[in-house]
Length: 358
Length: 233
Image (cartoon, rainbow over all chains, first blue to last red; front, side, top):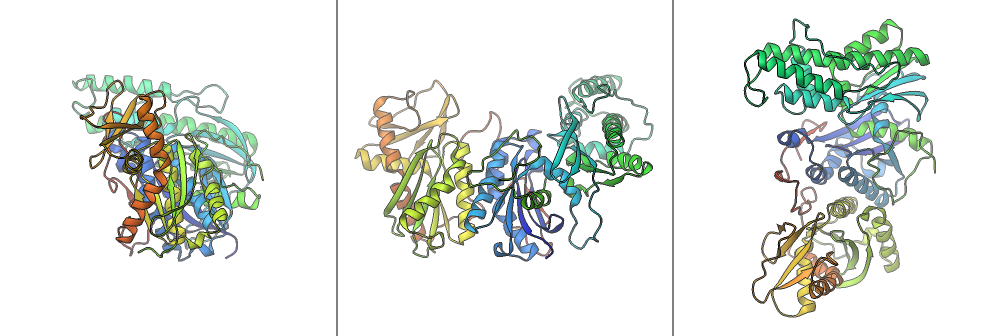
């Protein structure tokens, strides 16, 4: 082993993830118990249900991760855990489980910010994947998920300067909302991406909220516009207003999905590229569940390549919540001397900031 | 099943967290309780560490972990069960989930002597949860009174100011006797080889936001990243 082996625990929302990551980069195991299907009937996450599912799955996920990596707790050099931001009840399960493992096995406990994890997913290497260069500093990271949408500048490890972010809804929330309007169910992101790929006309244009020269973004106006546009489309097709009563023509759904997605992608890509140019970034890192969106990936990659900026986008399974990304960030924190005591508690609104070493 | 080492008990279902060490026979050896409010997670492990040190028991000596499964405050239950699971896993010892409600009734019964008892605990700001021996816990919406049968007495826990004085007094006795009652149940189950499945043990939840159905414990979850040749856990 070339560096410390971290056991990393993530439970901030609706995925129970435990991973073993060597030296902050190489994944030895990355097991995720996803509750997406569990929350589909309610069209969103019910926190009590999520927390109970974390309790149900955390032990099998740990066992599976250790077995996959072929190691025991004795081989582990530290335990990293997400302590915020996220749902308090969900966070508590991972935090208390991780704390207890660190206590009982006498390992250092490393607290990790979930958002930082999404950024550090860009450093991860799958088992057997060829070595490649780490993302170069300075860089701009765009994190887009169901709960977060923001841009940060990084000039060094764990050094974050917030550039801008959503002033209302996260991008993923807008995807969920519009997915429901189009009758595509929950979660909306993958369904909209799939439908949008079938569009041929590309003539449905949704509005963009540019918010001037800032790096902030807004999606609430887009949601309102989407509601109006979908209502008009339903009227045009002679359907009742309630989206549960009768489905739009498949072609209409595809065009509307494309129009909505194009608006989101356009704004996010333009702001990310402009930020990268302004700070003289050598790299762009994308993270968060919405970074799994292929249109967003393609658009930012294309523009970055045209400017000679290195582009790092983790594979989709590393963009959504997982333990490996916490292990990647945790290794940097471990090296910086960041530790938590046995009194570590959930921080549901934890901001992204340089950690203080204790 | 049990190795004969001491049983570590954790209950975080009420606002008074309790940890205890018991003999394999269920006898209470040492107990620590504190007002945790809704922040059980900050102190639990440090208190466990201190209890073990005070009693001269090494972590590795423990024979089993027993944990309260509620009903009670969600936050406390998550902290307690996640901690108990971590310990049972790390020490490779059996885990026993003990219904806190039933244990509170046991404790109140040994303190009060005879008579049928009905437990009430808070459930959110307005509702209460009602537990009768041998029945599933159920919600008592705000404003409704428990339908006590003749001779039944109320045991009120965490309901100071929201319950009759004698019910609150009985509730206080129940909380005082909780550790002993839980250890007795845990020891009996361990002796009978009736430990819980470490993975499947979950808290007893009675309330959910209106209209939401509590899914089955194994429902709706997909595990990925597992080695393909291994069966799903």
